[in-house]
Image (cartoon, rainbow, N blue to C red; front, side, top):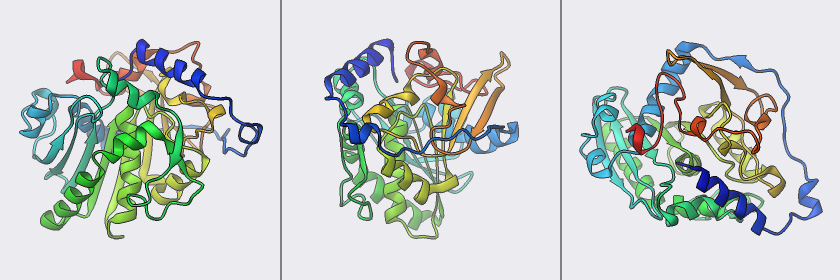
Length: 313
């Protein structure tokens, strides 16, 4: 999770990076001005709600998550068997892999940043880019670059995630995987989803639904996500949340397609969410500004009363 302090650190991090070369600043980036459309409440409930509940549970104490006794956040998801879990709230944000028996789906969920821990914060502000790990991402082109801090964080749990998912698919007979997370956890989940797509059998369906996603890589990364995950990838942004617009595009970062942008949340909890065609749609979070933002929007509520962070557990 981000606080004002994290945002200041992020902006400071941007200022410490050398200016992008002219070739990068003027390089081709996909942007969209396509018209948005309202997403139905049934789609929100059917496609977004369950991943949001798993992402919320990832913020609960990991010892309670491991036994699925984390109170209301766990109670909202009956029939869940946690297969592996971990994290230290420092360099490794909490995470878990579970079998959702009610849908026969294997779930991978990642916690976001712990704002009170400097090592956790540094996962966000380490914003140089590097090529993807060729072992974890064997089919990635040399032009693909991702955020160093996000890749390092994902790499610390990648082997366990991959081995546990493979084992769970075999033992359960499941053919569906759901990957989710909020904030830093959303970036890690995005990397996990691409890794899993490259390693799992082709008949396994991978759905990725993430919340408050920062930009995680360059144009080639965004194009890779689009080509591999397509419409099974959704990133939900909330009103004036500043996190989806950092790191800046001027540093060569780019969002993939699949944004769903919350424009309003009623007191009842019902949200108005717009589907945003293309990459970096100018009618959605791209229209936000670091000079007019809401950190509370990053935390929630997003829809149906669901917020993120330790206080929301």
